[in-house]
Image (cartoon, rainbow, N blue to C red):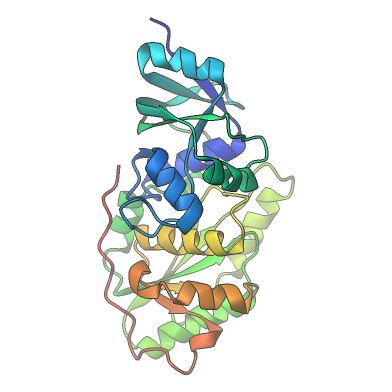
Length: 294
């Protein structure tokens, strides 16, 4: 029996890689109809869990018919033409009209007639990268590196590291008076011609006397989410990787900062934002436990 081989573009591979590393915990696969619709409408899974990324596997009608025969879908990297993961299909579905309209905001090619497949994803082969593999981590490995840090402040470098963000993180570590370090999460597009130059520049830029250690972590970029969803996803991914604090970048709008702050208890991180300078706690919060990882 033939198995559908679904070719994923760069965006699809990026989100798949985040899933396989455990960065998108508690997800272990593509969303079903209830979760997909709920995330689009409310930034929550159907069970109420705060989640902004509508991680869905879209299919053409022909692909859906092919996948029904075996109940399995092999995911193929469009660049390398290598199978990298397999989906054990739980369900096929279409979105309700209102949710389908919301999905089009993320991808205009999606329509009310688009089919989706939900199911757990298992890796087949490692997704390949041409450089900087020493700073690409899955969640268990990086958390092992950070386990002796009393606090872990995550700073985003997507695409650039802002001096103001780095300074804010260093000030937070100074004020905490406990051992901690910086987790600099880099969302760089390796297809860009200046990628290597950018990475070398970043490595020389990251200096913080307050941090006992500094760890760079290179992550795939997820595009098209909009400012609010993107910031929330960055915070949740940072928490999954072991962060206890999260710096809201200086380029983020005040409206989005306030929007994120309403969820800080659910996120489980100290949200380090210019809006909170007068109210920040004397010590960072305790390390948040690791969510269930696929």
